[in-house]
Image (cartoon, rainbow, N blue to C red; front, side, top):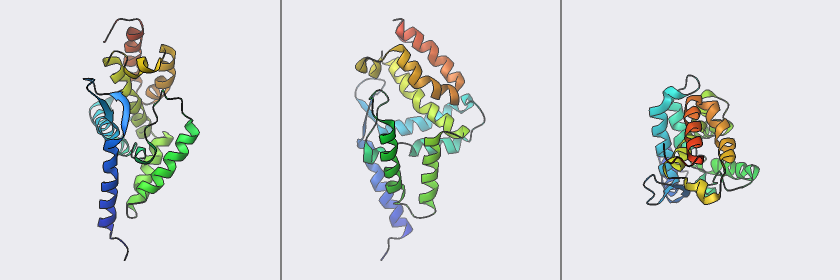
Length: 196
């Protein structure tokens, strides 16, 4: 007998509990431990709720929040690929796509397709909603690095130029006002002037 739609939904919800165990490089702001991917996703959803007026254009905050809640679910299967880790972006994309097919495929139709399409929209970053979601996904760890005295930048020997290249285009494209703030933070941080 095939599982009912409710049984499929509950299986998906049980599976995504594993996201709480995926450790990221970024610490909590109090530096007591590293954050996990579930915490990161929740925090980004809050960023979208609070900072939506800073998007580069009109965005649907509900869709942005949904994208951010879904965007790292694939890490259950493939783990976190840190921005400063030097991994192959093509390999990462392939592994994450396979994970998305498997995980969202646990859901009943049409929910499975809707969730997969929203995740793909985030990954492609072509719509205003996805560009803003991607910008927030880069902005939050940048903020953490600034307010923890260098965080993962210090741990990985990341230069000012690398920060600008890795964070700048994505944040600028989706939230130029936030990038202007980041540029000031970055300049002060790398000048040794401490936290903003």
